[in-house]
Length: 494
Image 1 (cartoon, rainbow, N blue to C red):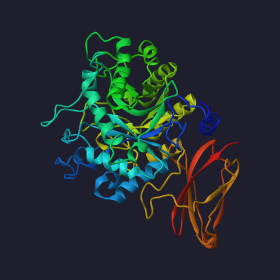
Image 2 (cartoon, helix red, strand yellow; image 1 turned 30 degrees about the vertical axis):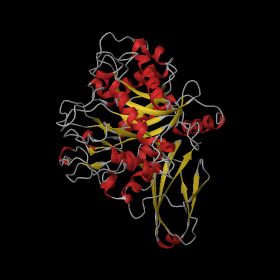
Image 3 (spheres, rainbow, N blue to C red; image 1 turned 60 degrees about the vertical axis):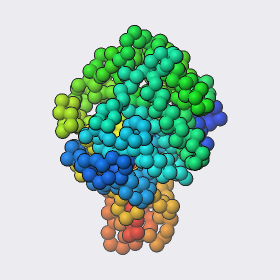
Image 4 (cartoon, rainbow, N blue to C red; image 1 turned 135 degrees about the vertical axis):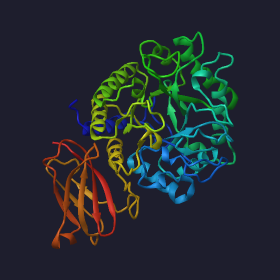
């Protein structure tokens, strides 16, 4: 576990450069994103459940169920204003995300969420998301969830619907995908939306519109490794026949030998051989699989997670490394484990990513407060998670607290040399902008160096900072001036 974060990012850049002209299985294909590895965040579009109605269904106030609380509600009040949507998207982009996994809970008109759901989403919120991303350097991939039944809707369990038969594969899943395709790809009223749906190269170098699925298993009888795997191509072929659109899947495979639901669960040693033969399989993209072990010790969890990830990465199917700040749902799900939300858990995951040299990462979740995990700043933990995510994604660490201007300014300070071994020089592009203080944060979200200027030095637009005692790696640097809060990234490499 001694490979450094700097090596990880250097390798990412090298691979993206060397293979820029050759499609890579599991990499993005949209113009301007060609052969970028996926860096995604799971996002509930819509408005938080604060008792205010924005869509068809009038929700109850469930903020009392939160185990973490936002220090800035603009990420939650998605539909309250265009400014809130701009703020949420810019902080994702500033963190380095190139893909939003859009939570999808059923067909239009089924807005009646379960009481514990943290957000009130709907087809309208999906429209808002597609509109808000226009002109921005980020894509969308729908993430189809299993969801609980309510008084107005019977709900959906992927395992009950999949794989179906070759003649009639997964009818409910197909209805969901066809709904999404109709609204966002072949809808003549919104010709700009198709470009925002992420396309990814499959194993045959063909572009497919990406769909992620959570909790992938089956409860149907007589399912085999082969019939389970072939079910995905059957669904994709049915969608192509009905719409002319080729789709591909990123799968949250539920772990066997765990308390995860499903009578049939895929394995890396058995099912993977058949999955790798399916043209529609884009990647394995797990969603906190460690929660199903029942363990709550961070070291035990990361050891299990590393073994589980290693098994799937060895299959040759592209693997998107899943990370989270931790898990805490003790109010809604009292029997579930609680772990993370601390520096140890963040550090253990950083070590795993750098050890595996994994280039694709997915973060779960951006705004899931009832489960106690979130990228945005919280009352309990401040900006720790956001800064950590930013360092892993290689982002510019935008001002996540939203003080004054939350966006990265065009007059971003210059940092030289970069990479650095001993000293860096910070130079403002505007010579009249005065540096007041500097804060350096490591990949765990911990402040490792601060500098406050005093006296006449405060009027300087250029500052030198000693970084000799910092370990090799990627660091976020925040520069506080008399006009703005700036952020940038630099690498220490000795």
